Amino acid sequence: MILHNGISVRRMLKDSRGFIFVVLAWTAIVVMVDDFVTVDLSPPVTVLGLTVAFFLGFKNTSAFARWWEARNIWGEVVNASRDWGNVISNLVGKDGTPVDEEIRRALIERHIAWLNMLAYQLRTSSRVSRGRKPWMFGHEWQSNRLELHQTTESWRAKQLGEDLPLLVDKDNKAVFLLKRQGEMVSSLAQTGKIEPYWQVALMERLARLADAQGRCERIKNTPFPRQIAEVGRIFSWIFIFLLPFAFHDQRDIGWEFNVTFLLSAFHDWLSLAPIGGLVCWVFYVTEQVSASMEDPFDGGVTDVPISTLCRNIEIDLRQMTGWGMVPSPTQPIERALY
Image (cartoon, rainbow, N blue to C red; front, side, top):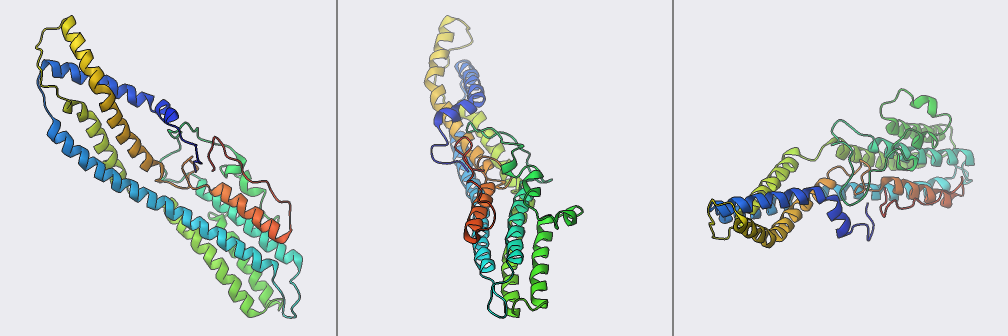
């Protein structure tokens, strides 16, 4: 998630300089051809530009809705985690005395382990991911960083020793950790350490967490509709290709290639290239912005900062309960949180 002042026009232009060079070169070629042959494509290019603009607007709205849903889900995870910490830290038995601290602490520690496991599973590339690559706003892809949940060590250090051997052969380890939480809650009720209604209340809270995980996995494992993404990209490039033809100057110098022709073509290029290049660049960036929100969990600079949210939840839980060492908050990397 890019923070305030994390994007500058200078960096955007720097990272799209290859595209700008191609557009300016293509404009120069079209200007020279136009000085030889009268070609006027202004009406169809104008209509095409309106069509592409509407389609890109729809694509951006759809991609942002997907990103915003992902952020809302993790907002629910934050709230449910705080609720879990509050209930567990104040859990009492039938006689009104607090449940054994070791049991309550294990329920909190396993919840922190589940958070980190879920973040790792969401950050892991799947068969429907587009593949990791640097984004265009001057930010490099951050990889092999322990705190960004891109390596197995990011979740191993958070697991309870008794759970680690049981996770080896599990495909969905986060789901298994929720099952372990349910088993412990059930054991407390069976041994009479908590009232039955406490078991029901705690299982309902685990159900909320399972529901949030399922919705995250739905977004992770369902790619943004490729017909929308690819058609928008194709339409944008068609418009960028045809736009220079729309700048028709109503002149036909002829086929004589001399200094006068070159100076005239250069003058036309100087008058048309800045505006044409700017319009093409705006359409290019607009399409790229929507592409940046297609996969909100892959760990890119524009994605939902689930690693930061995990750390914030752990800080809240440890400060609420007083158990364990409180970690330091995550720090922005190149004015972005991951």
